Amino acid sequence: DTAVSQTPKYLVTQMGNDKSIKCEQNLGHDTMYWYKQDSKKFLKIMFSYNNKELIINETVPNRFSPKSPDKAHLNLHINSLELGDSAVYFCASSPLGLAEDNEQFFGPGTRLTVL
Amino acid sequence: GEDVEQSLFLSVREGDSSVINCTYTDSSSTYLYWYKQEPGAGLQLLTYIFSNMDMKQDQRLTVLLNKKDKHLSLRIADTQTGDSAIYFCAEKGTYKYIFGTGTRLKVLA
Image: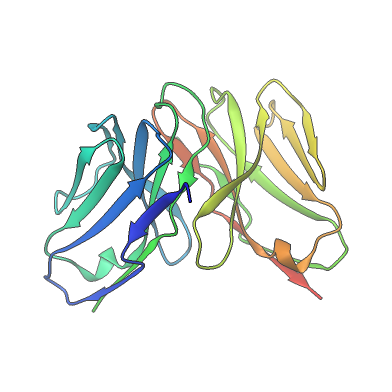
């Protein structure tokens, strides 16, 4: 299946831990994103990468470090997890860069719960 | 600012029409989008409208755009229980996509 996939789907962890979320797209897209959706369902962009290069860092704390080993992967590592990091994290990709309008394809989300 | 506002909830009876409204701020977006999020899933593009158009019809969906008032609406005709979801409008700002606050549509049987 061609899609955007994320692992894990659920992540429950203690405050202060470090965790990673992985994302892969096999759509051949150039641009990948991380979004955070809070409990009220508000969706905010966190990062955008185009061909492995960081394009957007939307004033996200530096405890969050994205890594793009290649065009098809964008992983998110979070250090020293805080209660406020609890949310659903969505990876997305789009065929073109941000200079042009184009559809975003979303992964199924990773629900992170910090205890 | 870059705010995209929507009413948070809408409840309709099966078979009725649903109208979901959105106001946006950035008038430079070439397209305006509607995404649908079903429970436990990511967002999926439902439809979009070119910013020079007033209306777009796509089967049961009608998108209306009032560019002067920066108002976008999505009408779903003959709403079905499978339409229950959260609907997000979105625009493309200068360097990022901005999503609305989301409208949770509940369809009553």
